[in-house]
Image (cartoon, rainbow, N blue to C red; front, side, top):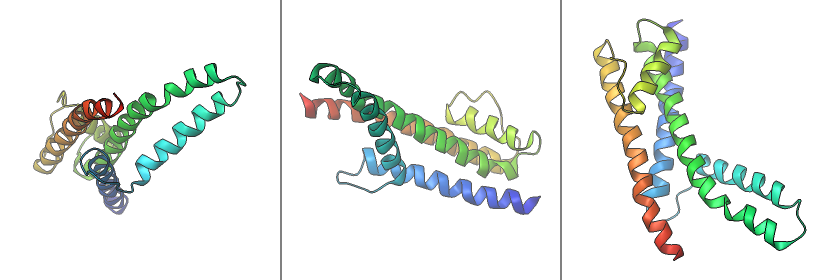
Length: 156
């Protein structure tokens, strides 16, 4: 059972690193950084919007539908980043959580990531990871909020 938890923790660490790279590469680095996570969201949103818009023949309804694509993509991007962070930190916390198993690890990661802190970690390793998760959650949201004025200024 310990091998499964350790393997899950390694996968979780890779997910946290991948999501972190995606956040930094998207909103901090001033040039294009390739991220499979950002690209997957962009392709999915683009496909969904064009699937709906292609059902209309005239320009006006297509334009109304496609005008919402960019804002929806921004919102969905932050949701996906936070969901991957949640999964990653849950898997990393799983070996350190003494009660509740994987569900307890998800609860602790969610409590930390949204910075509400309604669940207190019980071990030193869990405390450090919970603190890191709270910084990552707050930082991701703050970076996205800081990015929006720059984005809107570029379009006006």
